[in-house]
Amino acid sequence: EEANLALIYDKYKERFTTLQKEKGWMTEELYKYQGFWHQSKNVVSVETVMATQDTFQALPTDIYLATLPKSGTTWLKALVFATVNRNMYKNKPLSAHPLKTSNPHNCLPFVECEVLRTSPTYPDAYSPRLFATHMPYTSLPQSIIDSHCRIIYMCRNPKDVLVSLFHFANKLRGKFGDVMTFKEAFEMFAKGVIPNGPYWDHVKGYYKISIEQPTRIMFFTYEDMKTDTTNTLRCLAKFLGYPFTEEEEAKGTVEEIAKLCCFENLSEVNKHGTLSIGIPNYAFFREGKVGDWRKHLTIEMSQTLDQITNEKFHGLDLVL
Ligand code: A3P
Image 1 (spheres, helix red, strand yellow):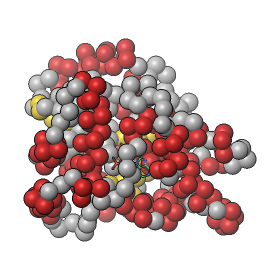
Image 2 (cartoon, rainbow, N blue to C red):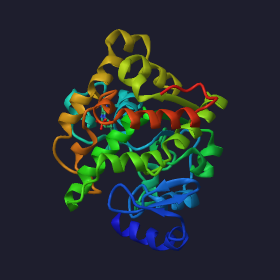
Image 3 (cartoon, helix red, strand yellow):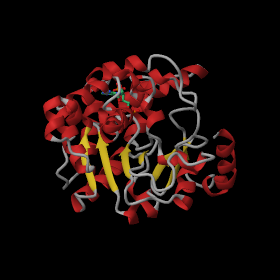
């Protein structure tokens, strides 16, 4: 994968090094492509987005989980993987379930990474292929749009995304010794400069399509999932064409999946080890709470973000 990333970087670098650039959250700069900021030299990056747009072929049976980084992607991957594949594991002991030993990122890949693989994740005509993506709606490859496959979008309160990203970035930057201050993080977030951001444009892009095409795109929030995991999971399973049967309801399958994927369980499994890209597994599990921003933002910071959110979401029936 690393060799392929170097090849793709070389192939696309002329196209993206001419783009507007800003200091990034990690060690690499962010590039503005099609209105959104992207990392470089990373598995999910401006060059892999460009390559995906050029080459990726979607299937109508595919399922895409779209999120901004730090909106609960890892959790959503676990929930969808466990729900869609539940029959594969139903007669096996729970200890044999992949989520009992692997990071959800190893169970359900980002579509942006397919261009880096020597062979595709799924065999030909596999159904349904499950992919995650951080790409904004307007940058999705045309074949994903044309295939009319289903997309679910999970969004999270902007202040909690900011706090989560701040801690995540510092965990990764810590290795190089120069951590960022929260004030710096806040200013970048408010300017829209976050990986795959601006936050508001990313959310709005998917939200609008979900209103226009509710059978194709389901929009929900991290907060919905947190306050009522089982009911949100029921809606999600139904939307994806994998509704829970009466028999499963009676057996408590929904509760079992919610428990398998809960913060305590996943963070326990992922205490040790690292992903192939070098990020430690534990970095994806911090607090897993709603409203942690209250411990980090000053009143002024909170008001500034409220004001931006009100302006950007004006006219939308969207309260976060
Ligand atoms: P916090 O930093 O606020 O704790 P992503 O997966 O998109 O990178 O998002 C990471 C955020 O999701 C982190 O938020 C992390 O703790 C939280 N998270 C991870 N697993 C979770 C789970 N099973 N339930 C709830 N939140 C979870």
